[in-house]
Length: 118
Ligand SMILES: [Cu+2]
Image 1: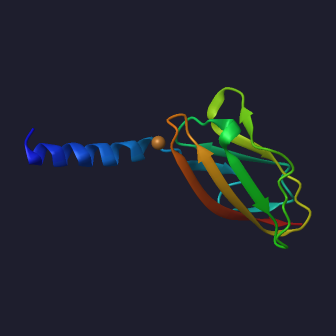
Image 2 (image 1 turned 90 degrees about the vertical axis):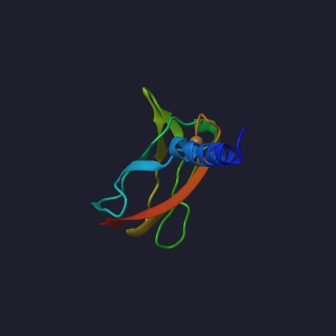
């Protein structure tokens, strides 16, 4: 194989798996939103199907208290989604940090926030 072909192959192999990673596509409550009243559930939708037992979501309120009431759960019929029961006590900014493992065994992580008003 010619060198130029090897380089092309390496580029292809290096780039293509990135498209298969599980990135956050949608959140409910939405990223950056302002919601009235504390939501009881957070639902995260990803760009790829997940290995739910290996996904983690940490939720904290404006006082830095951990407000995730439970482990991420699978959403029946939606293998690319996680739901997390919430127990938000304080109005203010809610920070979400997620770690996802997709079915292709790639790990991704990210964070965002939304705001709860009384
Ligand atoms: Cu991937």
